[in-house]
Length: 366
Image (cartoon, rainbow, N blue to C red; front, top):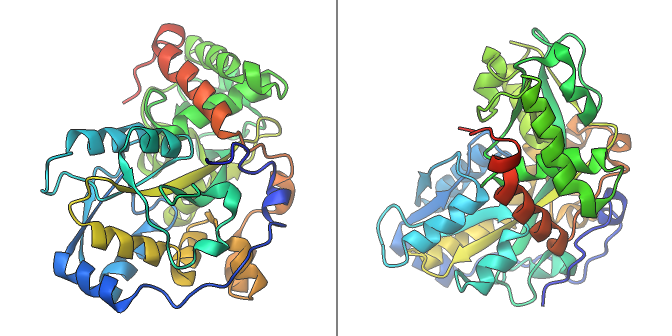
């Protein structure tokens, strides 16, 4: 059984202790079997998301495998559906691995869509962030924030309630479709948590109500917010995970200047999880990919993309986190009141938001 309470706060996340030490890495047999397969198919991994571009390239360089990158802009729900749709397909459209929001791990396991595998660094992953049988395991986390094009938005919103102001007409976007994307669903929940003054039970409906108002005011833009539309001014305010926004800020390099703001209230943290498809055409390549991601180098690769890797404490304890990376991360104060919803809470608000978005908000996000 997975543990329902993942993490209660950033503070608790950084004091977790770990048993055991990282092992040497994948076996020679696994490496040989993966090289024989020759290909790994991933899905929903934008190269500017969480440092994934460099992580993928380092995997290819280290092991000589080809990486087939499917649908980079897909949401967590799309990834699960891709497994279902390709159960008998051994071609390029069948994902070997998925990287999904926390709530999708247990549900995909329950549907028989995943296969277990415990990486060699298994003992350094917190028990509260992994399935005991190895069907899924946490990989990284971040918090929901605002990315703001400062050429177009002079006064940055400080909290979710600010998004209804007239000055933000045709400006506010989500980084995904809230009917399928974990990132967008989390943003709606965070807005509602702010509106409901921290009441998790009321947050989903409150979030829908707030986005209904944002849409009715003419402030909501039904376009998926990414670095390009943020820079072009199509979506000058984007609610997204902090690591995405910080990466976009760096990539744009001041053209335009981008400010990343953590809201005063409704600060929601999200953990993503990795898993291997039960129908993976390249199961050994998938296992080798997991070994790569959970190695010290793979974890630091995520940190370079502004994601806090799940083995962060183990790395820090052993002096393996470069100071230059630590200095680029946002100040800890903004994360002090972050809320980590439990799996049950995520399942509940996800169902409410995905089911009722069309009826309540009525914006077709594309």
